[in-house]
Image (cartoon, rainbow, N blue to C red; front, side, top):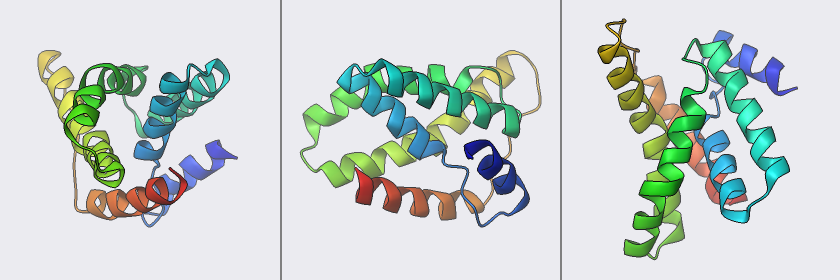
Length: 133
């Protein structure tokens, strides 16, 4: 069902691609040492990459790096869980775009595009993470 949703999100721009939600699921699975959830979230991120044309494993590597290096420092400095979730959504979209831009510039490939829809996606996914989180 997720594969169908990802395909539809490429056709209909009002459907968010769920990058931040998937990244948050991966982050939670890493926090809880839940192997099954980690595998499911990783497979879903790989499906996202395949549909959107990103490098294989780039989102999984990015979210693992964020989960191990950025989020622990952020949780130490901020006590507001809603603020942490908002920062995670910001890192998911803007940080992943910067990560892909850096990788593509090193490999001398075209840079990924970023448009105004990302703000809409960030707002929707922040609401989903805040409600479910």
